[in-house]
Amino acid sequence: WYHGSIGRVDAEALLRVHKEGSYLVRMSESNKLDFSLSLNARGFMHMKITNRDGHFILGQFSQPFTSIPLMIHHYSISKLPIKGAEHMSLLHPVNHPELL
Image (cartoon, rainbow, N blue to C red):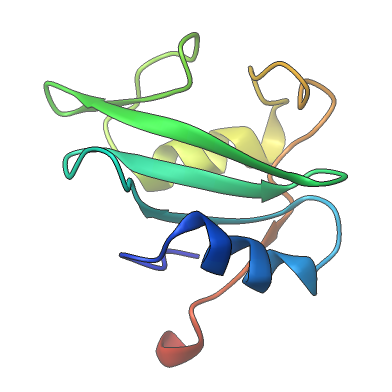
């Protein structure tokens, strides 16, 4: 589900052929220390994952996680703390084609 340095347009193209609840993680286009979670949620959402002193925070209100895989696991069993996606969890990882 990690796709490295792809942009939001490419992320949307990958997610377009997958069902609601599909997601991937990519490097942030605006800050090389941060990441983005791209989600198919009746349209596309792109949420920043901020790296603060080695802890990762989704959006502005999530608890800090020591790794992105721990964050992904948490939000695969819990609802997202993001306006517009409060009803959703991360259900379907979109694997990177080169890593299959």
